[in-house]
Length: 399
Figure: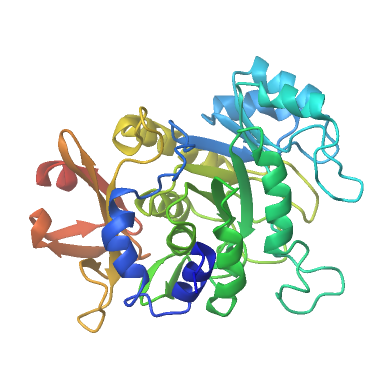
C-alpha cells in the first residue's frame, strides 16, 4: 500500500523526535532549512505588522516594517491597498473576488481575483486565520469541532493556488505546541497547496513563561512552533508572531525589551523568514497600536541588527533563508539531541561564502556563561536574554 506524504508526516509526528524528526532535520532539512519546495519563499526578510488601518501605515513604515498583514476589520481592501502601495509597503491579505457569504471562500469574481494576482506589492494571499479554533459549540480540537478542517482548508487553497500567488496561513501557536494535537495540526501544516506558514504565540501577555520544554529540549514558544511546522511541512517558509502589548489588561503583563528581543532572535535562529508584530490592545479599551515606548525603541534596534545581517540570513537569488544548522538547547548528557548547546543557550550556524556565521542566544532571564569548544568559546558571559552574532570568536565576544 502506498503511503502519502501527509500520512508519513503524520505518523512521524507521533514518534519520538530522536527517531524521526532529528533524522529528518540532520539530513534533508539542514540543507533546505526554511526553503519552500516550490521556490516561492520570499527573497527578503519580512518585517510585518498585523491588521493596521490606513492612518497607521505611515507610522509603521517609520518603525521599519516592510509588509502589512491582513486588512483591518471593516477596512476597504481597495483603499487599504492603494495606501500601502503609496507607502511602498508590501502586503499579505485575502484576495478580492472571493465568496465570503457562505462562506465557501471560493473564487466567484475571476476579474477581481486576477487584478490582485497582478499586484506586485501583494506578496501572498492570506487564508483564514487560525482554522483550528473551535466552532461556537465545539469542546475539543477535533476534526469535527474545529472551524475549518484540514481538508476544508485544502479545498479553498487549491482554488486560490491556481493563480500562482503564494498562499499564507496562520495557526494557533498553543495548538502547534500541544503534543496531544500533533495529528490534526500536522495535517494543517503539510497541505501541498499552502506555501507560507505562521503561528501566533504570546507567552508573556498570556501569563506563561518565555521558554518551554518540548520534544526533549528548551526553546521559546516560537522556536518550538517553527521546528514542529517545519518538520510537518517539509521545510516550508515560517513566520513568527511576536507580541508587543499586554493585549488583555486582565491577563499576563507587558513584555520587556529583553523578552521581546529573545523571541525575535529565537525565531531567526530556528529559521524564520519573517516576523509579524501584534500590537493590538483589547481591554480595558481597544487600540490597533498600544506598543509601549520602550518596545518602539527596541524595534528600531532590532531592525538595524536584522538589516546588518540581512544578506547573511536571506538568499536573494533563490529565495528563503540560507542553509542553516540548528543547535538546540540541551540539558546535560541525558538528551539524545546532540549536537546542541548547553542549556540555557541555543544557536545556529548559517553557511555563507565567507564562512559559517553564528548566532547564539541566552534563553535565561539570568546571566549565564557559555563554553562551546567547536566555536572556540570558553566561559563567555551572556547577560539575560543576550544574543551574540558573528563569524569569529572575536566578533562573538565583542557583540
